Image (cartoon, rainbow, N blue to C red):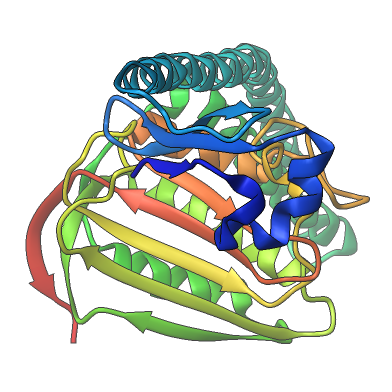
Length: 320
């Protein structure tokens, strides 16, 4: 709603801001919020004067017109920012995809030679054990290559109706096993199935959980809350309003500085000394390919919460 203050010096609402008002010679202030095309509040546009005065009908029209233009300009800027991020991810996709394909070809040859060598040694001998270990390492390397393919066309989701609730439970049990972090889950008994690629969404959840574990080296708790949103989630599916399933994963770790929060989904950005910066970038890429959404809230020294929203809702089911 619009707010009009005709006399800042004597308005009790401005009592705590008198020093700021004096520094900028603000004697009157008229403001109104401006919105996106989907009616999200993007900010507030204000007109100030160096003297006390009441806005005229023309001033009100001017303020409305200016706030409307501010909404268009701000949304356009946000769109361009997101577009640049997507273009960077696409560039990384071309590079990562090429590396992954070549790497897979090399691994195929290496694993073939290892298998041939294994046939020529004693099954119970030391050399056979070393060859088996090399095969295991090669399989893990291939899994890493598959993660890189998520950025490329090879990472296009193959979707089916899946239970996010079940995926979360299985992934949390596997990822947190052996760690000093406990998990507190609050998942609705009934939640709709969603159209997703189970393997890729498992990777998203796992990446977020691994980050949470690293944020709590001394141990702690991860809180997971999943529910079907009654009504609509305005930021899901590129801002469209529609029913969805919303999952939040929170930790009580060291937090993320505000200056880094917008960078965490960018490729090769990491706040960890030994981090490679692909985990959250991969997660962002997966969610974007699904037409869904991932975001985070945090500040240094406070809890960090990651949100994932799944918009392609299917039939409901019970998981008691």
